[in-house]
Image (cartoon, rainbow, N blue to C red; front, side):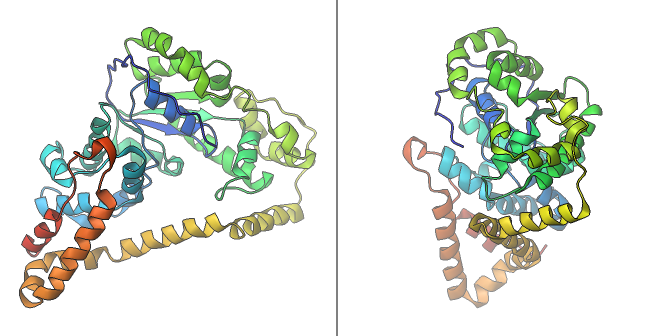
Length: 391
């Protein structure tokens, strides 16, 4: 679902906190809209979903001591090959500069690496606070909290039945009411359990429907939560653009697009969560139980719907590439370490590799438009490989 392009508010938000901001929520719950509003009107920088934070955390031990310049640079280079950077270059004109990251990193920890990456992106867009929205991180919230103990979290909740209607149109996620109810209720419960362990100054729940109905009030609540000192002035200046960016009637579609049995099924599995967030139940205590045969039917239908969707296979190809990349990490590290020896005994092959790597890097990082003066990754990466010594 595309949204109208809205120019950012000219009055800058005065932040008193500069901790990371993570927007949480089940896919299709309004998390993208929330990020767009924060980006345009409250000066919190967001790009596409990062998707890589947990993966690199899980295999961080394979990169060794980050106090070693070579190992730290290698980690930066590995991260910069992620799809996130291709998309931010394409969508925002941002080109990640490894050399600058090596110069500016404050803490040689994984959290410090992430902070350096996202701060560089934010600064390239004239902002000094960054955020991220990756729904899959909801399964790893303690890891995020370990990395960023003072981070703030905004949980966006939407009527799960409307979430189901929206998810059915995509190439990912649940494809029937049974799957949708299970996935939505479990994810919302997981996020809220995590939130109970945080202070009110670090965790905020926002209903998507409240954002649609009164966006100025909802944005005011978010702005105060983020510690913006000129909240009233910023919202007064952005009231019109915010209203134009929000589709007021984008709720309640489940009443027309889900069958009676689909709504019954959803409420039978997720009534407690719907009720907790104030969503009216259509069949309160009158839902027909879901039989074992019906459960098998819903699950089988969901599998069929996914495998018949080309986007499902495209996403799985990408996941297979990630697994291959992880499996060959040791090989890439060994090749990097053997750079001087390889150059000495196989100069022609190393020169060909060097040229191919440069073309790959430049094709991924060459900027266009007004940002063409942005520092770029260059062949210095390959020169660094050649100077590397045994780890």
